[in-house]
Image (cartoon, rainbow, N blue to C red; front, top):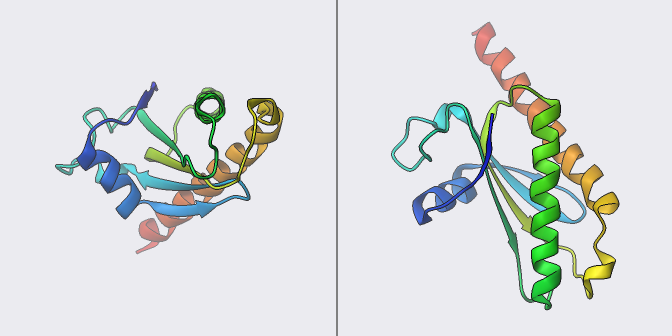
Length: 137
């Protein structure tokens, strides 16, 4: 499974509108499961790849260096999570950073990685429980 960047206005809008929200102390993640893989606004390759987009507001984090560092760290955390889990039930992840930050020295991988992994584990449990409920029907 490859981790790719989500591109295209229709795909990004669909991820934010249809995705299930999971809230952390630093960010909100919208998760869209693979059941939407055949739709017209789904990214091509959604059956096997994982698509990620990270949004950091300029109002929350004024320095571009810090915004880019946050995005880079979040994408790397998703890649490490995907390496540990062979299959994931979701297709797109859309992160929205919520915590104000000043300088890039304040942003550390050690601080972000546990919350990203917790949010992704919550999403995996949620979708696994939904699959079990649908299988019972």
